Amino acid sequence: MAPDWLKMNRDKSGGWRNHLYQGPVDPKLLRDKKRLQAMVQALVASHLADKSHLFSDLEQAYSLLHRIRLFLHLYLALTDNLKEELEDKSLTILNELNTERVQLQALSIWSVSNATDAPQLWKAAQRRRGVSVMPWRAAVSFAEQAHFASDHHWICQYRYDKALHEMALRHGGLSQMGAGLRDTDAQVRENASRQMNAWLKDMGVEGEELFRLQAKLARKKRFNFAGIDASEKTLEIARRVALERGPRLSKAYYEFKCRTQKVKGEKPVWHDRYVEDENTPHQNMAWRDVKERVLSCISALHNDVGKAANRLISSNNLIQPQGRGGGFTTPVFYNHKRRIEAGPFIYAPFDGSGDSARTLAHELGHGVHAYLSAQLGPMQCDGGWAVAETIALTFEHLCLADDREALADQDFAMLVHQPAIAMFERELGVVDNDIPVDAIWISALRGHYGADVSLQGYEPFWRRHSSTLSMPGYPMAYLLGWALAGYVGQRIEGYEERMKQPLLDVLKAGGNLGFDEAASILGVRDMGELIHGAFDRAHARLEAPTSMQSMQIEPMVKEIKATLPQEDGNEEVRNLSDVRETRTPKRVRRSKIR
Image (cartoon, rainbow, N blue to C red; front, side, top):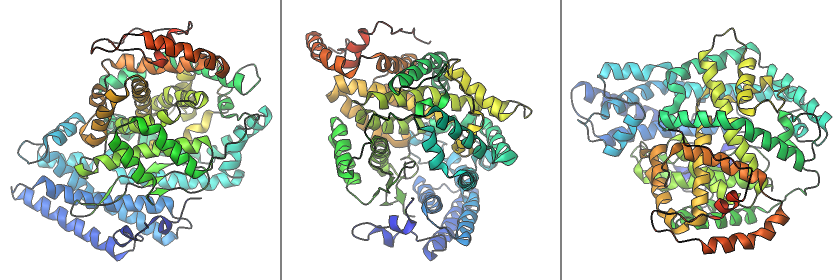
């Protein structure tokens, strides 16, 4: 169960409870809303009077807007038994804030001009994301376009998710249906699939129209690739490689899952990957042990990273509700003077399983990223999506280093399933409305899953991907992030000391660094090799020997590594996984994409 908001709104000294709001009708929130309006009006008036405004003034207004929006998002998402009038008030305020958002966005576009005192790194980041200098009226018109109305999109997702979960209750609840998909009995899994199929179809035509509308809007914003903050060339390389190599990886992965979980059938079915091994004892780790394990796994990183992680994981900023569910991490809260007031807050559900330990590692990565870049201020601290996921997935990758099956699951999710979702979003935004959405979904999955996996019963499952309604394009951030995280993990294994400072630099750079720049700092010289390398590692894991055989060859691998020449700046020492890969005869090395 999600905690009540008031349970989250505290710390050991009672400090930030006195600073943040207690609800949408909190007098302090309403006063800050009026203060924000006055600040924005003053900024606009100064601009129209040809008076230059300071970048710090813009930051102060933006920090207050960000604070109110972030609080309301969390309040709606986390509060149990939310009263209808408080929900309506929260949604009304979010809609009303759109006026200030448009004006601040127009002012920030104008600030890209060299005539302002905005930091050069911020200007460069904005230009990289497609923002150019334009006349004031054009900037306002640009900011008013519907596909930039982020709060409106978030509200659509919130209402859709709420309706979806209410409809799940008609079929016994989402947890019951999900448990059916994990059952070792094929008939139980098939019944659960039919049940979920019926549940998702309950959303009807309204849900379909909502997805289509958001996809059409996303097309105008290049499917929000500016939020990913990667170059078009890099995104095109990632899409091509995933489409080329996805089917083979999917086939190998399902063969691996069916073999290890003893799943029988003429053809693997899409939900076979969820089957739980009945012979594997259920993990029931203690929360303290999990925290210590995560901190130990990231100890290979810079001392500043470890200190930040220790501080976050031992504070009341870490929310640990019982039970499973998705985790998330908030950015930092700033007050109206641009000063850090609270956060980041890490929400990491825990049930004693390995999955919940992985969630903690992932969200801790986001938390450390937010913590170390917070000093840059509200307009420069938040990294692009792909950079943010690279950091979180690097933490996750380090904590899964000895868990072959967990890494294989993530390989499939990030390198096959996520790019399939991304293709679905793009296709939905460009095809005629006459083509059924179910058909578009299956076509996108088929391109990445290949012909060797049955997709029967998977047709309406696109309705579960509600993030499409507010963050289209996000799946590509996972693909890029996982590829770079795997590369970083491999480099740390061989050159730990040399990777500490570059990774810290990326963490501290916040939103001033794009994905391509971050990859370059971390040592990547060719994007095609980076993405192919992720698929190579995924295949090597699936084709690796059993644990007993691995134990027998480990000393030999270490002996071979010890005989290799040391790095001289031009020639790299092969790390442990490199040696293993060269011993895998089935591995196919791909040529570079130019």
